[in-house]
Image (cartoon, rainbow, N blue to C red; front, side):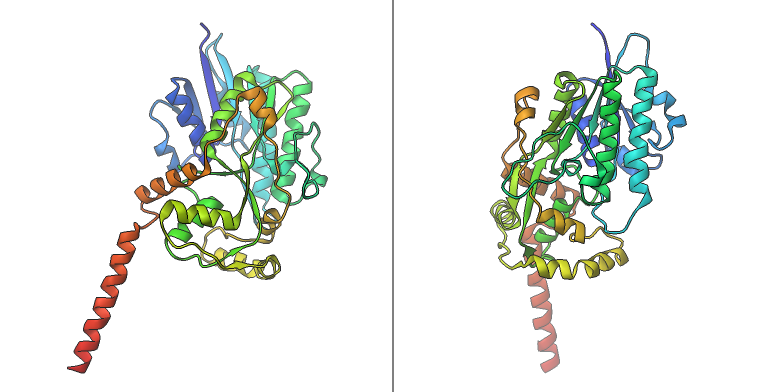
Length: 360
């Protein structure tokens, strides 16, 4: 039996770490590429071999690709920067495009057995509302909107060009990834945190296709064996209105549902101020001009090809939110509801005591 080594880039990220966790749970040998000093590496399974390096530095990746003769090597390229910022960020271009080119070139130079490249549905040109978006075979940065989408389109085409030259490579296109194990500030994760901690009072009209990170990870691992070379696979779930998300939040948490929904024109007019405010707080903003564009775009994606060829499946979204809530609570990012009530009660008692003291 031939041994297999899985080489996972972006292994400390939300998706990459979930892929590593699932592979280790299946008893596979995994080498995880993480940035030097990335504290999230400490949370990866102990069975995984940690390799410190950077996809933008190909000279430092020789050891990452090394393996004993005769051992199969499967590369899962999950490293990337997701950005909804309006400002141009050269780091997004450097990591998403040049980083992918470096990985693809090293795959060809070292003769890996398989590459699965994690792209995005944003790399696929939008269709008019009501039309279903399916996989395409050629990607053009000029046909998509936003820096993130353009970098993903350029990188994806580079992968497909390499596949046409003989590299065994497949591409997956996740939609909006969410779920437990997000140690960063993913947008739906932060929305749930703000909702539960009482700092969210309104939403906007619009929506998107959100998918559980664990389902995407399983789809990627399946693609390693079942994905056809030169083919793309959309790993999505279904479209959710923001109002429907609030209903799910309320159902799962037992908290009051948010009913105030702001019109899109109002949100877009204040997006610039929102970006400035969160930049000063050194936090990623929930709403930017690009994220609002995304929420108003056509997000009707078909995952039928992945279901048919990869045995891809998705779990109920209520379960995704419930598991995310439990994980965030255990991490201390969400205060238990009874604790919030107790804190409110203590404030009322303290205020009552101060009034009595003042009148005596």
